[in-house]
Length: 499
Ligand code: GAL
Image 1 (cartoon, rainbow, N blue to C red):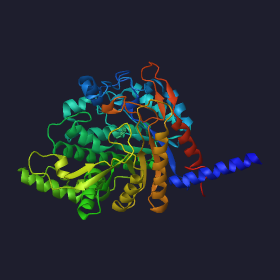
Image 2 (spheres, protein in one colour; image 1 turned 120 degrees about the vertical axis):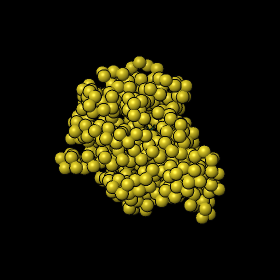
Image 3 (spheres, rainbow, N blue to C red; image 1 turned 180 degrees about the vertical axis):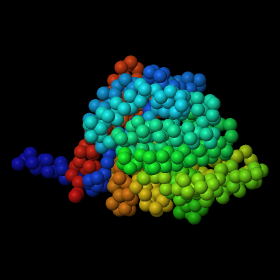
């Protein structure tokens, strides 16, 4: 009797606490899916084994290690190439509905070209993962391009600046559909083209770290990426969809841009920021062309700068037709929110994409921080963002393809990561039930700590900790594993959900 009373009051306390912290007590829809993600260069290692070719991240980390915070690279990373069984056990243990992974293009096609040799060992590796996932009833979400372009395509062709890449990528995509498509439920053509182009070809914060022509190269890159995406989409649509029955789209990243005030100008600035970030890619695939605000502003500035045409390339009407509608869902990588403030346009001078946007960005000091300078914990941002996507892009199906929190991995106890997931998922429930946003799946980043690009191994996003100083790269669960498992089992964020 006493026992049950104590339990009862504990339960009541918990309910009260949940209410006080505002965690949503509704259950995720029964067909809602949960997953977890990794990406090839960040986890695989085996950078030159079994016939794999060099890619732009191998090249960048080997030639300019100073660019990487701890001078590290992905040569071994989590050694996932040799630890398939072990990784699979972790994935199974989490109880996810699907696993999001990416293919290393140069592990399959060492030169990047289809008429170079196909690397059978690389094909076998992915074949093996996908077969095992299938055997375990775990769906596969496969990204064709998570930033690791075969180096020969960079060196001999100029990477994403050369029109030829569209066909080269199309051939790679067809090969991947052909080889693996019977085991893949979701395809993503590209991961975060904004990062590929803005950081790869302007800020230099990602490979190939080219900074030669600010305000120009990034737009050319995006143009090629969009055409390549459309190419792969149509190949899948016309040659594979009927038999393989998967879905295909692209993964776009964006912050939520919160206006600093209710002033009309700040509202406009925040909207403009979203258009230059997410709209740059979403507008073409949904509506057929770049956002009008990009066409207008880049056009006007280019003219004043003395260019004879806009630095933003133009699609032909045929290309617009080809690109429009090339999505079965929208893949959304979202981590954080920033503030947007109206400012006078930057003066005409050397071009840059920042000047094209001319919005002042900042972070609110009161927002909880993480180990990544850019990542603040702002759970309500995911609700506002998904509602904005619903309203701006014809209420598409949205899959959250990444969301997660970084710390420095000092301890296996990671309550702040648990809190991040709880709060973001709670806000997502509000988006689903109160705003009618069509979010059908959620992917946590990441399965395990891994190579975090220029931050090396200093920022950790994993559910499982990896000991990078041990040659065996042992994985150990953090406290958040238990939390995510419970969410997945109960489809619920509180002790007991309302039906
Ligand atoms: C994303 C990226 C991932 C991962 C994550 C955390 O932009 O797709 O590869 O690094 O950020 O920073």
